[in-house]
Image (tube, rainbow, N blue to C red):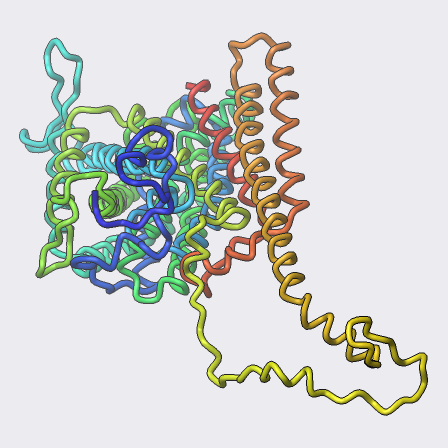
Length: 598
């Protein structure tokens, strides 16, 4: 096990067993950094925004628009993107606070290890690796159909790049996707500065093409009367559940800001730049997603969309073949830069897990020249290449959404934990600085030599029963206070400690009730195979702890120790606890709805 400080005071033989190992947490000041070689700090706000946009815009527009609109959402595709964007925005607020507090490689894995426990962190770490690996493979498989536009079809590509079906296995292999993953992996091994520069150039090209699609598609829509919105079935041909299922499917297209958080250790000014990079990239991407999807669905009926090249085919169907080539060029650039953004965080998560002793130390080794975890980069690139070679895009997108939604849910819970029950190591961060101007204590005889005020009134004096002398009442009260103040201070401190323990216990109960209530309510609204009466009962039973837990957190104050957790002076998530609770509800509901709407 790596040398990482934990907040469990048990010896290793006890700590390595059962529930104690599952719930032990890493101290916030031990951010996986500080021991051994560190990642080079080269990133500022422009680079973070470029990474966020480049990592996000890709499969959501150029690949999934066709499949989701045709099979799930129909004309309500833009609304599905809006719902997914709102859920992503709520999670982005939570990510921004934790990233500025704990700017370390590992993203949600590191937050879960610090706030929740090792067991959940281990699950989150592998869920994130699955998210980025599978997401990158899904993006890579969209490259050959768009590249085939320049050759008159994907079947006319050079023979080494053409998709083929393996006889007897019904598996369609995509050599073009695998070669693209290998090329991007080699670029990432060159260094963060080099890969960011290439990503910036291709992101600029990608955004320019999307603006062209919006402007040209709007013109075509007004010329054709927006025929896509006049189809039988109306705006919701698959119903509300179809739209929500589409939102859950396209949700993984918003994972770009998660990529920004994973580069926290390489940011020069993380407390300032990380929240700005996350917020700006998400806002730009969400706006482009909604505008492009609204235009494409409006100019082509959703039943007629090409599942592989929906944007290029939309212009070709409206007699604008020249525009088709522009879109294809943008799609190739976008998918390439999105793949780069998907493969970038994986090695850093593996590195963080290796630093914490959850993986072999080989994955934490850095190249001295580039400060890049080369072994982790090569390993994750090889895994993504194999998936891109053999798996289907729609299957991959559903798997990615599961991992993303799970990670976002844990991040929302972590914000509640930091605000109401911060890990106990936060108290260790308090440094008792001595008084710069020493103040000597008065001598013991100071109180005894005080003279009583001259007052002959008997009402102002009393008789000391031991010595029979007259002592002023004021002095007697002062002596009594001097004698009993240490006891009063001790009693007050103990009372305050007991009150704080009661408050923390109530907060833990509230957070637990919220998690249970959200899960039951989400299952009751999405599990259509369960009898209606049982679903209503499940919803009512789940609503009670959900409402009760929310009321508890609204009633009790937040823990003052939250100010000492991690780095101070960064972004703070607003409207706590309401915003994190809504984020948790949306993410869990989309996760459950993804399962039952497929």
